Image (cartoon, rainbow, N blue to C red; front, side, top):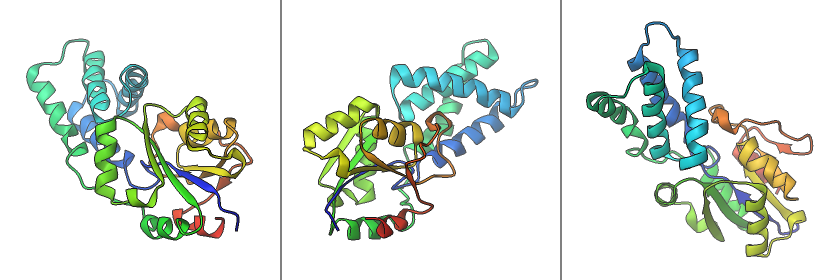
Length: 225
């Protein structure tokens, strides 16, 4: 088998991530209990606020916490009080105080893939937060290089190819996010493998091109690479 370069997403591809945010959102909706807006309407406001905040403040738990505060003020049409801010912060504390839970089969699959291909890690978010998860995962030794970026755009993939001396025709991006992992990687000339996750963040949804390899489970990579 020809040696290829496999670039892996991290959150919700190698380990669970967004399900933790979703649990916080559910607790937030329970706590908010708005008298006229239902849960779907409140969630729509939160999604809009998150979309705006991510564009300015980036990804991660700090940006998410800001969005919870901002959404509360937007819905309530008043400033959040110190007590309410403390309540919201308490709800979100689970995001930074949790163990990393690997997706089933990840460690074994990476170990085998690494014997015949070059593996790289490309994850987006706040550097300190993503590095903590990488360290806790005990997976870093599988990768030739690890890259933490603010966003994954077409230019990000082209820069990675140039920096690492990769050949686009034999380089594949593997991830769960159509918007960040699949579409921009294909536009940069890389191959792509889509591994859907039940809890992929709504802001990461997009149409998956027809020429993308779609797998149900991470270990299925061993049948293709």
